[in-house]
Length: 212
Ligand code: SF4
Image (tube, rainbow, N blue to C red; front, side, top):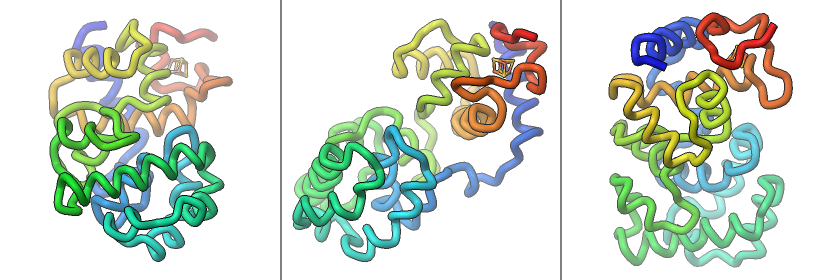
């Protein structure tokens, strides 16, 4: 797909899913620490679930120091509904400890530093840099971005890191922070995993997977 067609698709979606810069993240965080922890927890579950446990989790553990000292069983009880709660507890306590040991208890602002933390890959690092620090270094590729990029024809790859590279080549940087929001929105509303509504899709004339 050429750049002009690809950009016209995002422009179309941008008209359907309007947003403000502050409204682009589906996680309702209040500071960078909350965002990184909530993003780690959001793997394989919904943002609604993670938003619902935010207050209890951060009332008990408001910062890296307190979470680093938490008893795993107490954290597991609070985040149980997020799924994979044992692994996620290990990762968020591990991240809190490493924030204290290596970064003075503060969430770092670069992809390179962020991806040294347990449970933090490029997707999470891109979300944190983009939404907590308003810096765009790459594109967060989650399950919706992955599925729609392949279906629409933005990429032939399935590996998230390769998809991110393809998207960064295809789109000028001005779109990088928007792509995640637009494809998640369209993936939830129309191009769902099991039943994409191709007939009602506003980008069907440009999508390589359109079927009537
Ligand atoms: S035409 Fe179908 S497959 Fe393509 S983006 Fe729209 S809903 Fe998804």
